[in-house]
Image (cartoon, rainbow, N blue to C red; front, top):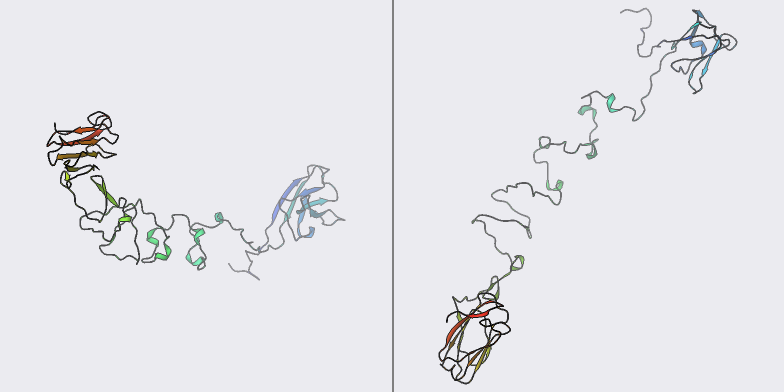
Length: 316
């Protein structure tokens, strides 16, 4: 559209507002709906029954502040008559561009998808502005997560970790805690006994450290000929020679069920020099008494069962 003179500026153009009132014959003050700062009564138009009123304190009206310090109150020098139609045209002054204060624009005032990468300054978004769980693997570049970005301890207890067929660990000791290594082709070496839950085993009542060597008797472990009194050991057998005098064999002090002690009259002299089997606080054949053996060439085995019957003869 062509214009004569200056083209109107739609941004910096005055907007006229109309307020209407009705006189009651006594009220002299009327407040506009909107405050109009930076103007005087000469910048507005006031009409009573379509007759424009003369502004000024000595004439028809003045413009000033209302009770809340808003500049919008019309005060007539004389109250308009009852039923008089009053209207006021304001806003003839030029509008002004307002500066937007810091922090005054809310999210609701920003259109959806209106903020793109070109509107965000480099390095301006930190971790506090990411929603938890909002970054997925598709948005992480290949080979971008290094050891320096990992926590010192990773809990993978609910996940399956597949290791490559060949991998290298850091130098120094590597610790596997509460884990099981399967398959016969996986070999662990150089593991000290102290690192194992059980560092020894017990055979025939004797504790043997892992890694040690020992001889294990098949059945009864027969001992050299005994010629004097002694204390027997479970699973051992004794050739006893009483030629020089009677001998006492004391049974083990803390036997377990199935422990055995075997005896043979070596020289056939039990009838002249008896063998006494000391019960060592356990019953023998259910009796709280030592056993006296006086039969020539006697041979027998005692087996422990419990504290009631104690040691029982294996063969009779």
